[in-house]
Image 1 (tube, one colour):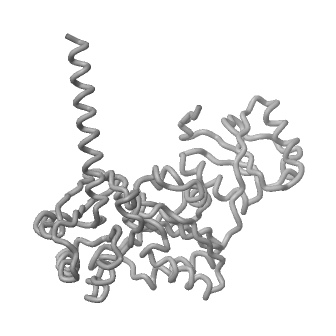
Image 2 (image 1 turned 180 degrees about the vertical axis):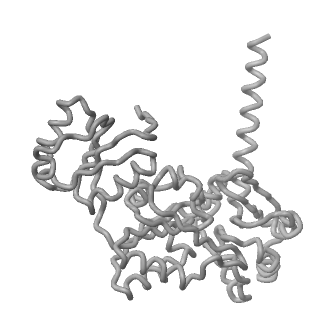
Length: 343
């Protein structure tokens, strides 16, 4: 059972060394509590507890002697809640945020956000839910096609400077940091500056967004491979020929701007005109929409589509359509049976 308590104006005592307790202090302050501090169990000897204490938040900082202090609080009828210690300061964690919904954040991602002092986030990450996941300072460095609020080099500089200042830095990105996420460049910038860095993998939109539309990227006896392509820049004729020759499923991320060139290039390379193709817009977000056509007609069918979108090219699109038709037929039968039973 999870309870939500309004802490506005409540007196909270946070125990623990400053470095270990800094995030707990920030969380309770962000919740509106009046925070009192005890940084060492020795300081508590002979010191009266603050009046009107509502709760004691005990940070596990490894110092011996806290047990006697906490027992004293319990004897006074004050609830004691255990709080994890903040991690070591001065490092960067690149976190894959998945396709934009908090439901697909990994456990490791949630933990990294909880432990962060500063979060630099992208517009494709689940940033709307950040106030519920962290009390860190939130910095929007999101980039849009043709408009970079903060350049990539400046993002790397901000991350490094913040970590060198002693902060736990999270760089929250959409999808996975290593799938067209420039994560390799950011890791290299941290390593060059002597900043400790780690990567938390995320659920890539290359798989999850087609799945949200009911499209499997592989399917037995239909497709035993898939290729992921960036749609930011047009492909070369050689690349069109390679993709056509490989077979399987082609998944294109952020490909609306190059959709016309891609469809035309694949047709020139010999891909059949009736190859099924889907455009899945805003996967897992309000307004998610799927447009299905074939290679010969997709350019006109998708005229009103916009990024963020994932393109799926291959016979797996028909598998999804067939499944949806079966599901619809089953639902119709269920409704018919219900009406007959009710009559």
